[in-house]
Image (cartoon, rainbow, N blue to C red):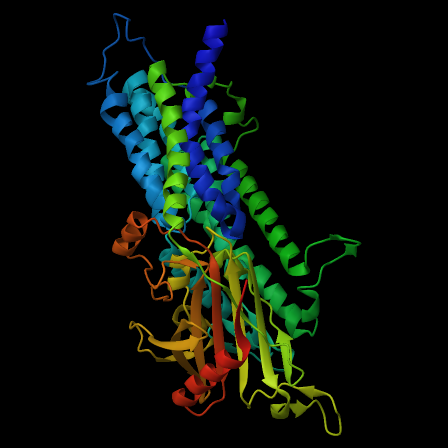
Length: 555
C-alpha cells in the first residue's frame, strides 16, 4: 500500500512540476494586471473540467482486444523527452525576458507536448481527446501579445468614448472628444481608461461562456454562438457602466467616483468607480448563467456537475524513473537559471539611484492621478506623477485674490517617475509603451519624430555620468508639448553606454541579452513633459538646465 501511494504521489508531482514553472511565470501578470486577474481561477477550472470529463473506454495494453496506436508506449521518449529538455533553454531565455509574452505561449506549447505524449502512451488518441479541452482552456489565462493587447484595448476605448459623446450630445449636454478623453466643459474631462474600455468584461465573458458551454454540454456550434452572445452582453454592460459614470461627472458629482465609499480606521471600501466595475462583472456572470440555463432548457437540467469524479484522468502511466527525472529536471531548471544570471550579474557595476528634486518654495506642485491602465502595464514597484510651475508664471484664482493657480498658457512641467526593483523592469513594455503610443489617445498629434521613426537621443552629462533622453514633440490647439524620457538602470556593464530600452519585440536583442546574462536589474524611468515654449531648441536648453539644477544621484 505504501509503495502504491508513493507511486501515485510521484505521478502527481511529475505532472504538476512543469505546470508550476508556467504558473510561476504567469503569476507576475496575474498579480499586477487586473485584466488577467482571472488567471488564478483558470488552473482550478481546468482540473475540474478534467476530473469531471468521462474518460473514453481504455483497454489495457495487455488485453487481446487492444489495438495499440503507432508508437504507443514510446511517445514519452520520442516527444516528451525532447520537450522536457527544451524547457531548459526556454526558461533561461525567460530569465532575461520575463516580460516577453511570447515566452508564455512557448512554455505552454512545450508543456502541452509533454502532457499529450504521456496521454497518448496511456490510451492513444482516445486519451488525448479526454485531456484536450481542459488543456487548451488554460490558454485563457495567458496574456495576449502586448501589441495586440494594446491595440485592441485602445480600439475599444475609442469606440466606447465615441458612443458616449454621441449619447451625451443627443441628451443636450456639452461634450467634445479628444482622443479617448471626453471634455465636458466646466465639469472637466472624462478619461475612458482600460477599465472602462470593456476589455476586462470581454475576457471574463469568454472564460464564462466557454466553461458553461462545456458544463451544460452544448454542441460546438452552440458554444461558438454562446461565446459571441457573451461578448456582446459584456460590451453592452460596460457601455452602460461607462455612460453612468460619465453622467455622474456631468452632473457635478465627479468627486465621488474615486473617493472610497466608506472608511473605518485603516479599513477602506473601494471607490465608487471600482465598485461599479465589480457590479458590472457580477451582472455579466448572472446574465450569462441565466442565458446558458435558458438555452439548455428542460425542467431537470443535466450538466457536468452530476458526473462522478474521474480522478484517473489526472494520472499518467509513464515509467516511474521518467517521473523522477521530470521532477529533478524541473528543479534543476529553476535553480540553474538563477545561478546562471546571478553569476553574470556579479560583473555588473551598481549605479547610483537617479531622482528629481522639486522641493522648492518658488514652484507650485500638483499631484496627478496615475491611471489603472498605466499601473497594470508597467508593473512598477512605485511611481509618482506631478505638474509644477514657477510661481511668477501663475495667475490669481480670482481678481483681488492672493491665492495662485496654474496658468495653462504659461510654461510648466509635468513629470512621471517610475521605479522597479531588481528583476521587475519590463524593458519591452517600456520600449513599446512610448509617448508615441499613448499621448495621441489624449488628442495630441505627433510632430517629431515622424511616425514610425526612432526619436532623437539627447545625451546630457551629470557628474561623471551621461544620461540619454529620447525627445518627442506633440501639438494640440496650436500649442506644442515637448516630452523627454530616460531609463536609468540599477546596474550596468562598466563603461557601457546607457540607452533607453529599445529592443521591443526584437528577437536578436532578446537572445543577446540571454547569452550575456542580462536580466532586468531594476531601475528608474523618468519622463519629463514641457509645455508652452517657443521651440525645440528652447525645450532642450531648459531640459539641460533642469538636469543640472534638479536631477541628482544618490544611494
